[in-house]
Amino acid sequence: MNYIIVCPPRSGSTYLGEFLQRSGLGYWNELFTQEITRRRQIWPLDLDEALNDTVVDLAFSRPDSGFKFPYTAAQPGVLTALHRHRSVRVIHILREDLLEQMASWFFLQQCGVSLAKKDGTIWNPAGEQVEAPAAPRLRIAPVDAENHLRGMTFFRQVNWWLFHETHLYHEIHFRDIFTDAGLSGVCDFLGIDFDSSARPDHVPTPRPPARDLIDSFAELSAHFAGTEFEKLFTE
Image (tube, rainbow, N blue to C red):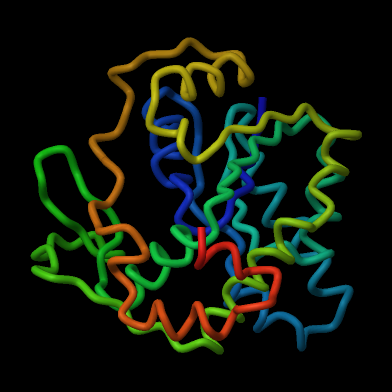
């Protein structure tokens, strides 16, 4: 059984992928990223399609392997390559708290904190241990916030429902990623035994709520007044 993990950024997907790897499945982290797909837009279409097919075929060369597929890699050619593999099982991580998701993304970019572990240590994206920011504050320009929120909204509306028609499909919410019940449900979907000892030693990265973390919160609230995102800053 092969699988993909469809996910927005900062949704616990790395935790889930490492859990599946520790449970005995093959796992590739990110074969398609936003930067890779952006660069390949200038390639001839037939070359791009051939590469998509080759990469996907390689990822599924083991009968029990899969990979993480972030929203930002959702290019038509990649989706077409995935749809050729009708036996692949699709795990879709949902994260509906857009404001907290945005804060987590900019926290990674500005503070260099990728994940935390149960022993209290903090790590950056390069896998290096770092000191936790003493009093982290984020400065997010309105244009950057708008680009992020509109981008995430667009990618959430990509036709993931097509997978419902063609693939076995399972949804899990971000809040359930770190629970035995959530992980057990994924294991049931993939047809493997749940073993709590396979859980990675990650924990959600500690940080203040978005309201307390973003210095420019009042500016963002005023910028989004009267828009579809107004409620994110007022509720």
